[in-house]
Image (cartoon, rainbow, N blue to C red):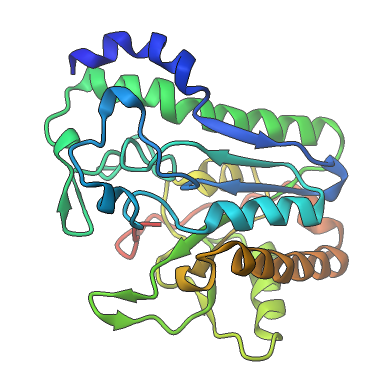
Length: 279
């Protein structure tokens, strides 16, 4: 696309590709939100999609940003949230993943992604993907330098139905081989009355190259991804409610799991990604 040559000037107007919420590193937690917003930079217009599509789950994880913000405040923890739609480029994918830039999403062709050359993909990586991951690395380095490697907790949301099939889970924990944080979260969540908890559903946490693989698995940090059903967090009240619920769970996990949660331990990673979803 010829528009990429004007992008540096436009970025001065758009700002960074992520935003950071400052927090206390002694909290021992770094909160991430990979699909926080559905904004698309002006040079790309709407990627050829309707405003209705840009407002749907295919463009971002509805409600996840609000939960992440409230959770960071409740735990006094730092957080990093993306600022652009995953339709532009998906920060929760590896650079070699064929879904890094989606041409078809939830049955919708994305016209602005239909014909992309290597230079355009490289430009999107440089301006909208790499800065977020660099910020995560920097944040982890800062915590490690302070003597307390953080646990990584990513916040996502999923639709209440898929292809007209209802999804019964209220919340789910996604994870790969490192069980330290995930199993403890599952235990505490399942202890909450009236909550249906999923384990590696509706997507799999065994996605090589995703955010937690890059910054958790490869660095030996305890990590997990929490998926919350969208209809429960559509508005501020639900987002605050679920954030406080998660904050209480995380506090219990941190209090009972001990220092092992903050140790550097490498478990390797699954390589079978057949069950991966949209994240």
